[in-house]
Length: 208
Image 1 (tube, rainbow, N blue to C red):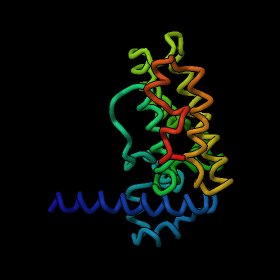
Image 2: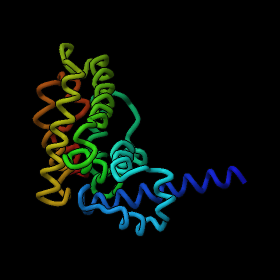
Image 3: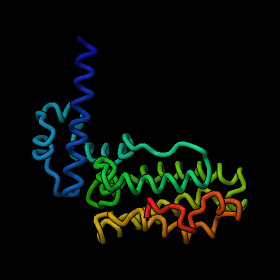
Image 4: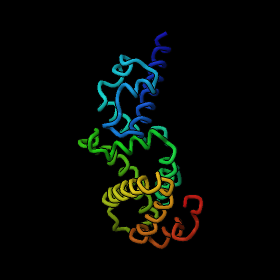
């Protein structure tokens, strides 16, 4: 009985989070009303406030859990892996509503992002780990500041996806990310790293 109740609570939380992601993705933070989220989730106000005490807390959960159902390439570690992760994210942003909503909230100054940049730090650390692995393999310059470049990549990626959203509803985001790497890679990669990634030629046609 207890387990059944726990499972029901988990499913209710997921339903609320999913509904909130859909509404935040459609309207942004200010335009999202609790009543609309509850109707979308099909739950009561009491159920919502059991899991989330306010709209801001709910938005923060969407923002911080944006990658919870994202499948990213896991191996091999290194420069190719880093490029593949960014390209996979570009594809996910076209269809994954939780990721899209989390990304939108992360750049919405009216929402929880105005005093919480932790999700950017999470992505930067994820990217930094791949850069460290790439440096150990001789794929990037030995003097590369992996932390600084990881943060720079997060900023460049964020700006690129915003521009893509405005210009095409993110339909051209994979192509824009390929273009971004064509400019970034020569500044950080060794000749061996460029060969392994092979992005500067047409080896990634499925992403463009």
